[in-house]
Length: 197
Image 1: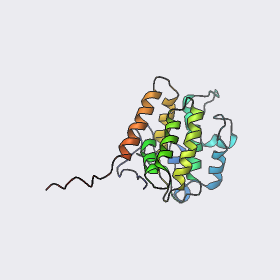
Image 2: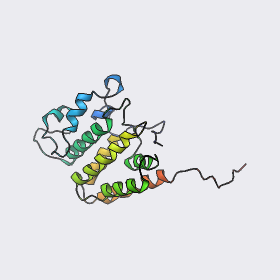
Image 3: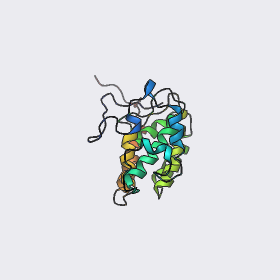
Image 4: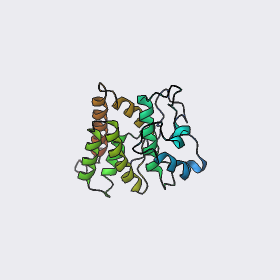
């Protein structure tokens, strides 16, 4: 089971369509494989230090400052490139939070629900952005392996990862991820409840 985007989903306020790489128009509706390979080279590397990625950032600045936004966008670009690899349709879909997407992975039947729970908990409780990115890469590889691949809102993920770097906000992000994961995971029809007329 994969979870699809809501019919009326839109980008968060303040994000013009096409701002981030995954939301831009692409030939055949998906990015070129060579571009995705260039983005995957950023895995485990510091944001802004991989020249083939430079043209795909929106948050590089003239001062070369390593900002929370640049770190977050770097992680999201790498995750998107891993997720999109070999996919015939775009894996970015507005309105599908990381918690909701991982609930879809959990309920897919392809992986042990307990294993998905553990891996998501490891990502959610990571003590650094690099550690969270490592666990999220494993999870997006699993989402990619579903047929069809489980989609994810990468624009929302960027803003989550910006806040992740703020000690005053990381708890709120963890709670939001957990709430979305449980709400989507537990949203199953109750077959025991009689129909009302």
